[in-house]
Length: 140
Image (cartoon, rainbow, N blue to C red; front, side, top):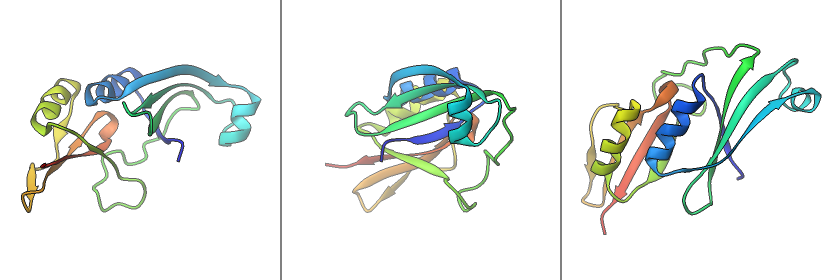
């Protein structure tokens, strides 16, 4: 897998949130023209993208913010049982610290932090645009 793509209405907020999570901004670009329109199937598209990578350089998320055509709501606050891509998960070292770093960026705990059989602490948070993020801290 090369990357997962997500469309947002506030590119700066998405980048800041995922930087607080520990991802690194790999680069930004402006996208428009016949080539892009042909690939994505939208005529007259005009967008800015930001590619973010995990610290180990294995995984990437590409965030896109469209100026044209106007983005449509894809049920960004749908519950976890809605069809389609619903969440992304990260293994982290310190769940409490990560939650504290994400809170100023609008992270909202979906319900609880739970412990599974003394081997894992986990929770879901909603980030910018309603993106569901699962945070997993394994015990050593």
